[in-house]
Amino acid sequence: MKLNKKYQKILSLIHEEALFSKNGCIKLLYHTQNLEKSSFVCTYHLVKTFSFSSSDILCFISLLSREGVLNKKYKIKCRKCQKWSKEVFNSIVEVEGYEKCGNCGKAVIMDMESLKYVGILFQKTRNFNYGI
Image (cartoon, rainbow, N blue to C red; front, side):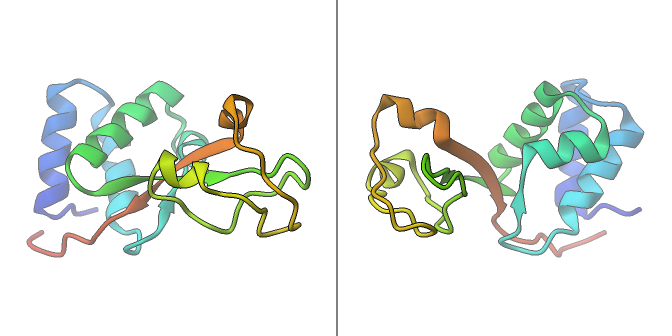
């Protein structure tokens, strides 16, 4: 497995912060490096796939976000049909403007209770194709 320069830089940052074992970290970075641009990354999937703790994965994702690899996005789960929105929102403010479920057509009431129905995922912003 070869990491390009951007991911090698991230690997060195991870080692500085002593987040992961080297072997596990390289597998996780390689997986992320090979995702298509605009692909979504779900913390639950990474925890299950790579057997890291949720807190380690969140640290990893936070670092990738800081380095411009991932952007935070939001989806909302309908209280009525229990399906996730087809729409992806860039900010929590956009989520507040969500009025009607795209799956079942029911009105969505946004209040403090609704926050537990907001899902956070991360989208790969771009590919770093320079250097290996």
